[in-house]
Amino acid sequence: MIERSLIILKPDAVQRSLVGQIITRFERKGLKVTGMKLAVAKEDQVFAHYNKDDEWFQRKGEGVVRDRQSAGLPIEKEAIEYGRDIIGGIAKYITAGPVVMMVIEGHMATAVVTSLVGTTEPATADIGTIRGDFTIDSYAYSAKDDRAVRNLIHCSEDVDEAEREIAIWFSDDEIVDYTIVQEKILYDVNLDGIME
Picture 1 (cartoon, one colour):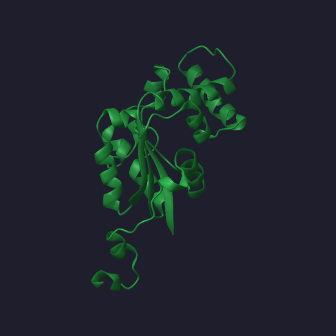
Picture 2: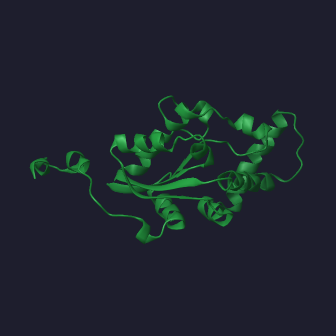
Picture 3: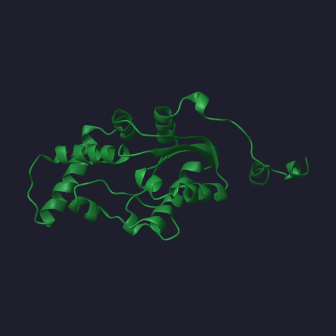
């Protein structure tokens, strides 16, 4: 059941000096960092990372059209183009400054990380989650400003997505296989490793 998850601390997390506090939440939960680096993401990496197809662009774009109509805003392009603009806006946001990329490992890592991070929209994320505690941006506010939601962090949604995403940001030799003491208490079946 040991899994890996990709975490990207976005430019707003780095600029607000929240990196240490966010990493602490993963470590306190019992997860370990097996890869970490600071870099300025490239646009082609972001598009490869989000890996969306025309069906996704169309579906999301239709949502944007509905939102614009209900807000009394003009519809200036096809729905699919609004959908493509979503990833374009995210690319602009993530490439705006340094990001911290991490590979996090542990039991059910993707589900545990997702619950620690909170829902995508910070304004509605539960208190106690990273997004719920550290930021207040919303879809409505970001749409008004025609920008991506500044939600501090990306995390993989499932194991397959994590492995695909990790390969975009990390080479195999940048991920370290090691053991930490707390793994004995978390995973040792008989706890006999405690006295070794």
